[in-house]
Length: 317
Image 1 (cartoon, rainbow, N blue to C red):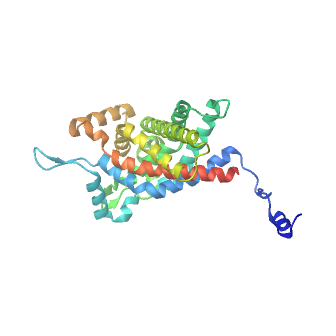
Image 2 (tube, rainbow, N blue to C red):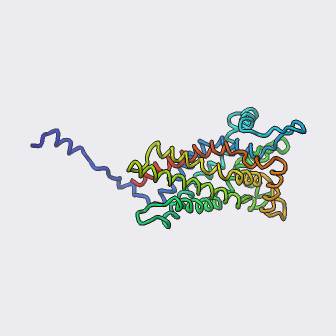
Image 3 (cartoon, rainbow, N blue to C red):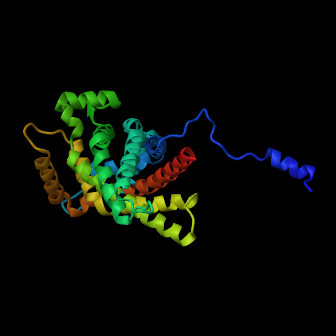
């Protein structure tokens, strides 16, 4: 016999349905929205580490004597920024990052998901090798369309170069116009090849590590990865790239901070900068900035993957 309480329970139990006023988004729109959200969150969280990294990679060692040079370490660059510019100094160059980061991460995940459809197996699964290939491709796409001009503008702003007692580069628009005035539109793509190499290896290592660990844990536990485990796997994925491609990043940073000379190709400039760096500072200088890169990339990828997966899951439901 059905009681009143049981009848009431049936009456107030409704299946979860999507409101008709909110149409279900297609996969590309979901990837774009989730990527933009994750990108802005990453920029606001991790930018101070990038400012320290650029300082370590571009400040030359100070020679105290014929036998001793003081190299720009993580601690002394950090303390120098804090002492000379205050806490807000860590956010120098943030405006172009916030401006471009949303499109950058959106483009990264959208292109990754697009390439992924070409390599998934019959069960809809992507192998670690497939993730490596998709990461390489998506890194090149984001470098060509978004990252290179963003990096050029950001590094100019972080340099804090002074002319006539005033900052030479002030804000995204003014810096962009100044670069175009000095070097033409191509100046915004200074270091494109090195940026593409860095981004492709970054995303290859990151996506391959994330895919491998995610698949491994899901197979062990028998259900989809969620919550803090996504954050932990994203954190691990963020460590992989900086340990392998910091020399590329150092060379790229120095190239983009310099002003191209007439008739000099990017390859010639990169070769000169590399030779000068190794001759004057030693090969270890190419690995300068690895620590702040790891400190930035690990939480950045943790934030990015966590928010991306959460927003994607919400919009797909």
